[in-house]
Amino acid sequence: MGLVLSIACANVASLMLARGTGRGREIAIRRARRGSRAQIARSSAESLLLAGRRRRRGVLAAESALPALLALAPPGLPRLSEVRIDGTVLVVAALLTR
Image (cartoon, rainbow, N blue to C red; front, side, top):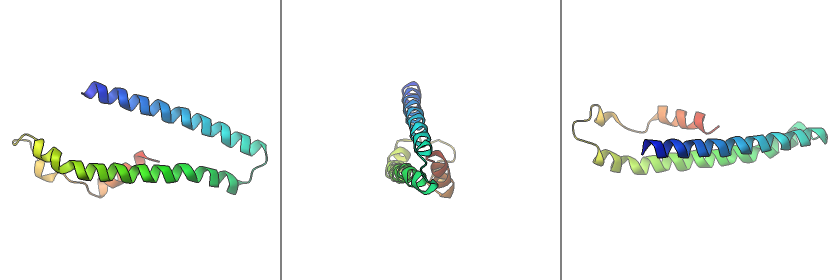
């Protein structure tokens, strides 16, 4: 299962890299056509909005899956009662979806 998750993460990373490369070309073309910084910033705002939506969906999915995962956990698992979604989790999610 870990191998499948690693492959999925690698696939998503390569897709994000390809999209970033395309975005770099787009920005270079806009600069070459004398686009203002405001125009370039507006075109980049779409990525920020999409990242925010993905972050919210991920956190909501984690919150909804947490009770089921805790129910499936073995009873002797140390610090199981401390598992929760708190500010640290939200900061990590924000940093990962930039």
